[in-house]
Amino acid sequence: MLTRKTARLILEDGTQFDGFSFGAECSVSGEVVFSTAMTGYPESLTDPSYSGQILVITYPLIGNYGVPDTSAVDAATGLPQFFESDRVHVKGLVISDYSVRYSHWNAVKSLSHWLEENGVPGIFGVDTRQITKIIRERGVMLGKLLQESDYARAGQIGFHNPNKENLVEKVSCTEIITYANPEAKRTIVLVDCGCKYNIIRCLYRRGATVVRVPWDYDFSTLDYDGVMLSNGPGDPALCGATIANIKKAMTSKPGKPIFGICLGNQLLSWAAGASTYKLKYGHRSHNQPALEVGTNRAVITSQNHGYAVDPAGLGDGWEPYFINLNDNTIEGIRHRTLPFFSVQFHPEATSGPVDTEYLFDQFIDLIDQYKK
Image 1: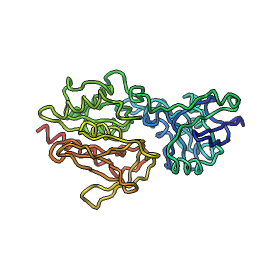
Image 2 (image 1 turned 120 degrees about the horizontal axis):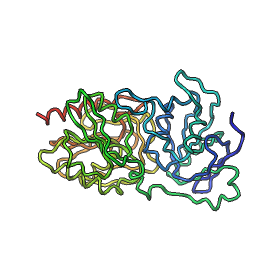
Image 3 (image 1 turned 180 degrees about the vertical axis):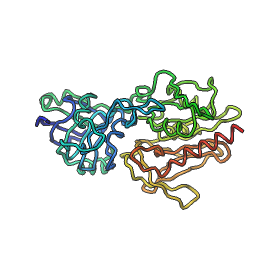
Image 4 (image 1 turned 90 degrees about the horizontal axis):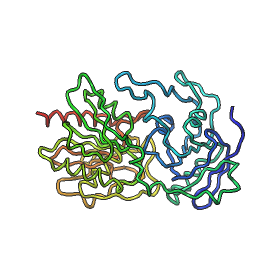
């Protein structure tokens, strides 16, 4: 049972929200962002792209289906079966109504228990819609989530901006990890900038051995058929080593297929001559519409990013691939003649939607064409 201890969320502009504490009893600070997803909180909380952030979930009912078994793994890859990484990455969680009594066929623990295990605090009983409205109007801002025992020293707990750090370095693997597929017909290098595990599953299911390398690893020394650039947190401009390695791969002869997702899209764009900028409040939801350029085809996508691509500096041969129908930001780029493309959204999204998982098939087809 939860103790009725209070907690307080203080935004950078001084706005304050009082509620009740759950999860770990500690105080944290970070960047406050919101997500409009109705399901998938186990996947969202383990998404490395949320590193350094206090997540506000607008859907009012959270915790109702508990948390699956964290020790369950995929038989093929050995990866956690129900999660996107091996731990919770958010700094704190803000919700409206917490379901103390969970009910689901594969739940083994409560959300509060799981957060406590991972040292992550939460607050419930606050108006998450009002918080979202403030962020939408004033832009994303820093915040701190305080336990009642820390109210008296609130002024001593500063606001922390995680985007000044190289968050990718914190969430990337530190050594090469190979997911060997006995039926593999191709080998794909996955540059781990904070990859969601379902990227690995999607490639593995399509007959690939996946070689996962650290974010700054010079993969040109490896024998591979294609390169996957993963999602990840923070400012892409801080990933200079990754950008340099991508440029090296693009200019090698023959150029091998490259596919980027989320941060991978931004890094490929930097390598192609473009730059990125901070969005007012980011895109974090499971229902963002994107239009494939040159067609009337719109897809519904899952997204989680705070930066967008400025296409002004894209080099010769490059063009936008997808456009966000809400704000017309770039949702992907592609080369007209070479096998390089990327998307800002998540075709591997676990909990959906899966409208764009076909892009993995497209990537595999490109690899097979170039292998010939």
